[in-house]
Amino acid sequence: MTGAPRVLLLPGDGIGPEVLEEGRAVLQAVAPDVRFEEARIGGAAIDAEGAPLSEETLARALECGLVLLGAVGGPRWSHLDPSISPEKGLLRMRKELELYANLRPARVVRALADASPLRRENVEGVDMLVVRELTGGIYYGEPRGREMRDGVPRALNTMVYSEPEIVRIARVAFETARGRRRLLTNIHKANVLEVCAFWNEVVTKVSREYLDVELEHQLVDSAAMVLLRDAPRFDVVLCPNLFGDILSDEAAMITGSLGMLPSASLGDEQRGLFEPVHGSAPDIAGQDRANPLAAILCVAMLCRYGLDRPEVADRVERAVEAVLEEGFRTPDLARGRSGERPVGTREMGKRVREALA
Image (tube, rainbow, N blue to C red; front, side, top):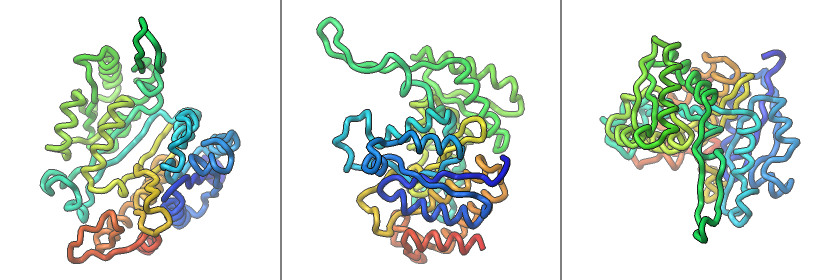
């Protein structure tokens, strides 16, 4: 990347502006050469500009290449036609930036092992990464919609993948596994879906380029069960779009709080969109109660995958763990145990910056 890197900030809706401000402050602390720009997306863009993603904002995202996002959506805009909902802005940005690989880590921090809904012994050591294909599959396939057939109303969606789409996401997963424990679990439903049988064939073919990575195939329903029983066994999990959407949410809940989980949507040409997994949570917006750690961990992912500064990413992740080890907890993490030190959004962000220093 030549020149000072540019990052477009999209605070969005609900708690998005609050958590993104803490993420921005951390990124400024660890990467002072970054130039920030800011624009609107989602409901905020609808209110101010009449659309969930303006052409100007999209152009700026394409120019910057790196986007740090807060959250979009909320009941305030639920009455709108689905074609102009806040979420449509996010979907369009992913598509236009060609961000086909969604990386969602699920890691149980030792200090939060008791926060999981599962028993501690079932979650200790969980450190997995879901690699989800993001721009194909049933969410984008054609034909889709509603129709009348022989006088009977019906609806349909189409799950379709081309070989190049599968090859590129498989390579992302294999390359990622090479930097971890070298185990790749490929999720499918090939026993009933022809598209999944084809997916498996292509993934297996790509695996011949990565003989140092162990490849296993697992049915999606079986994988959902194993996640609850033996999550630590997973390393990198490769999924088609629909299955990745479901399993990454299940993996997220194992960690105990959506407020702890970042994600990265990546494409070619050093483009990336980094956003917390949690939603806009409008019920707590503006109350200094939101957990900013997912947004701060998005900064770590931006440093690792967008700026190619893995050592900086490690620093941010260590700072987050240090703050949690000291007992600091936002309301979503508090369990009423001794040693907990309740803090709000701004205080949590400040503690992370102090740990970095």
